[in-house]
Length: 168
Image (spheres, one colour):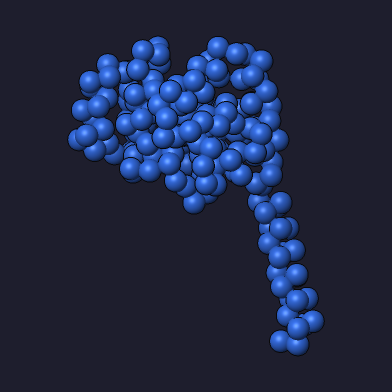
């Protein structure tokens, strides 16, 4: 999901070389990314400007989410894939481990072999894959609108109490 430099498309392509798969990429590819895909001989399809409903269908039609980004402010695709029961392979850096919790296979996004090993583990180990899916549903529940709104209300309440106690 996404094709900006931080989305790590080139290493993702390298990690998938030789694995029988069809890569679905959401976003406009650069010429370098297109050339890399052609050289890899991977089957792929690209999609752009999808509606929310179309994005949900993309997740549902996929076997897993490979999101080996090198940087994310949050990592919404992790939660989206969790919510529809797809196993997630994502990065072990920045916000992604916090967002994924125990509901993803964490890999080093700077190491092609690590990405490849994570994908292969999800493909080959049904028990592990099923555990990620189960944990994914639980993880997605941490981010429902009602839970997030309650957390914001708690923060605002604590700020208000702190402001009153400090005389401001």
